[in-house]
Image (cartoon, rainbow, N blue to C red):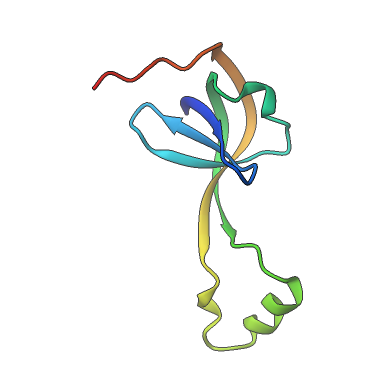
Length: 92
């Protein structure tokens, strides 16, 4: 996937794609030096769960309504390649 690498206030990285989709990235690599650049990421989509207390989530699994923990789709990054030092401004 190609797009502009962004980071929100909480430190979460996102890829703003050329089709205006915002995809959450999951990476073991430090991406901070690539924020604001046009990048190509290689990886796979994964389902992650909202961060909760580990003990609480284990207790919730035994309850019938354990589906209350939302599943969040993220893109697990295996490789990042910088295509441009800046993100191209989108034309309206």
